[in-house]
Each structure stands twice: as structure tokens, then as C-alpha cells.
Amino acid sequence: MIMERIINILSDIKGLDGWKINEKTTESKEIFFIKKNIDMVRSKDVQHISLTVYKDFEEDGVKYRGSSLVDIHPTMGEEEIREVIEGAVYSAGFVKNKYYPLVKPSYVKTGEIENTFDKDSLSNWISRLSKEAFVSDKHEKGWINSLELFLDKNKHRIINSEGVDISYGSYRGELEFITNWQEAGEEIELYEDLLFSDYQENFIIDAVDEMLKISRDKALAIPTPQLKDIPIILTGDPVKEFFDYYYSKSSARAIYEGTSTAKIGESIQGPEVFGDRISMFLDPDLKNSILSSPFDGEGQKLSKVEIYKDGILKRYWGNKRFSHYLGIETTGFIQNIVVGGGSKGLSELKEGKYVELTAFSDFEMDPVTGDFAGEIRLGWYNDGNKTIPITGGSISGNINEVHGDMYLSKEIQNRNNFMGPKSMKIRNVDIVSG
Image (cartoon, rainbow, N blue to C red; front, side, top):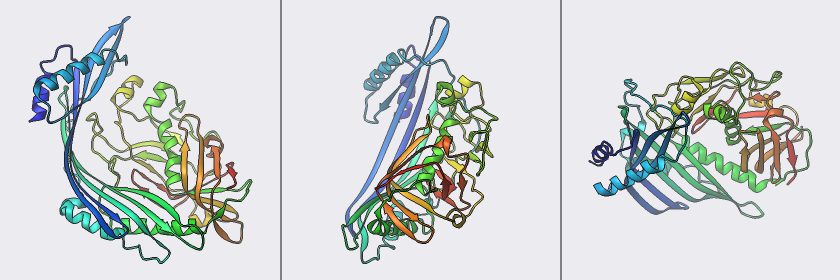
């Protein structure tokens, strides 16, 4: 077995002070469509092994731990593996990170995570899911142009020199599709990438149906008018991007490297908050997220962690290295964000004039400065009497100037590794007309 061969070689390498192996084997089924016609069906079985080696050294009385990451291919011979490892150990000696320990065994039984995909073969699931993808493709003016569906069954194993040896399984589903819609004018085309890790009834059907409706509104949209001093409602994916700021600000790495000055016990939204206060926790077991996992990539056992409560930062999160640097308990690297709903329903958020934005060509949030901006792909402008779809133009602002007067919807959405408000209402945002 390749893993045993690697471990035997590692035990014979001089100048090596630690190591970690991440093995991932994947059984994959893929299907490709052009409109409703199958273009190609493909299967794959692959094994990927990455090895991290660690080398300790001192300079001027300071202890350092260098590391180097290399890939080991299953077809490699013993001498080739040895040569790669020795080269990695040599390279690790030039990396000057302050010393940190590796994860030790947790001796916690996790059990098998239940998953609906375990109840049938990947081939049968890929057939069922592809049929569901076309259920909503029934419009005269709009249709699915092309579609690609992937379903992976993964087996993970993490071993390190401290005695960690854990295994667990996961699934990764991905649906990429392009929708077209044509009214009287130019035909428009939109792209969507949907990620999932478990079967949920109507999940794909509803997602495709929503995308076709967005395509229809995009085809009917007028250029974004010149608007000033009007509330902005973000809906869908942009909300997820917005909350990544608070996630980044609470990381041990950001604190250690000085890119975040967030302090435990203080309000992340500033001293005065007139709207909703943020409550957030990280959940390694979030349903239908491809990033859910009982362990992080270092073998650290993961558990649900509260980060913010009513806007107050409760604790930092981080992997073994940066938690060690700060002298805090290691939470591990958890990538699922859960945010509590707000005080207003979506209908309340839409009282009066507003601009609602749900799709951007490119929405970016700077995790250091809080600056955000996006080019509007689709939104709706309500002038107090009627609502019309808009497209083009852009928005820009800074989160520190908006989150003191921010309202979150009671309605909740679940988008891969984010569960939280479906919409949020903010002010002090600049709009450039299309």
C-alpha cells in the first residue's frame, strides 16, 4: 500500500521533525448536456496524496518550524518518493515560521455521518438529479442552454507523526448550467454554479426555476437609473459575501498578522447600533455544505463554535498554528457560517422606496478595509408605486459605514456553506447608473 510505503520512508529520513499526510480517494460520475440532449457521460476514480514535512531550527534563540508541501503520486517508486521527501525537507529549512505544535489524537468517536446519497449508486443518483434539473425547463422564451452535473464520493484519511490517524467520508455535488432568455430584444445568457453535499427534495428543481425567472427579469430589465439616498436590499449570494467580512475579522490568523483589530468583548458593529445586531456561529456539520467535515485538514476535531452574540465578539477561531501563537483554545479551521435571522420580514424590508439587488457580475468585499463594490447584473427598483427590473451600473460602500443601521430578514437561506438571512437592508451605499 502506498500510504504504508510513504510512512516507512519517512521513518528513515534524517533531519525530519514531523509530517502529515492527507489522502483523498474520489469516485466520480459526470454528465454533460447540450440543451436537453446528453453530450457525454464520464466516470473517474482517483487518489490524491499530499505530504507536509516539518523541520525545526533555531536562530538567535528563537525556535522556528519550517514546512513544505508536496504531492505523492500512487505510481511513484520508492526511490522517487524518497527523493521528493528529501527535497521537501531541504526546502522546509528555508521557511521561518515561529514554532507551533502539530495536532495530537483526540480519541473522539465521530461515527458515520448519515447521507442520503449512501442509499443508492452514484450512477442512479446522477440520472435522477439530471432529470430534476430539467423539470423547470418548460418556458417558451427561456431554456437551459447547457448543463454539467458532477457527483463525487470521497474518502478522506489524515495521518501525522503525532499519532493522528482518522478517516471519514463525504460527498460533493456540483451543477453548472447556463440559462438563456429572449423577449423582444437581445437574447441574454446567465451562468449558475450550484454546490451541494446531500440530497434534498426540490433543491435542484427550485434552484433552476429561480434562475430561469432571474433570466426572464434580466431580459426585461432597464438600465439602472441615477439614484441617490435610497436604501439597498441585498438578496441571495451577496448576503453571503457580506458576512464573510465578520468571519475574516474573527480569525486568529487575521489577529496575529494584524489585518484585524477586532477585540473580544467589543461590538464588531461599533458603539451605536440602530438596526439588527449580528449573531454568528461556525458549524462543521451544516447540512448540504460541501465544506462540512468532522475534522479539519490537520486532523483537529471540529465542533460548533459561537463567534458573535448580539454584535459582540465572543472568541477567535483558528487552526492549531495561529491558535498556538495567540495562546487560545484551538477551534480548528471551520468553513461553515451560520447567522441568525433579523427582526423584520422581507415584506417589511420592502416598505417605501428601495433597490433590491440579487446578482452581480462581480461582488467583492475587502476583509481588511471593509470596502465593497459590485457591478449590477440584476436588481429591482421600487419607486414607491411599482417595481421594475434593472441591470447595469454598480454599487460601492464601506461596511463600517452601513452596519450600524442594518436590518436582516427573518427569512433564512441556505447556500452551500452559509445559512443566514435571505436579505439585508443597508443605507449609505453609492449607486452608479447603468
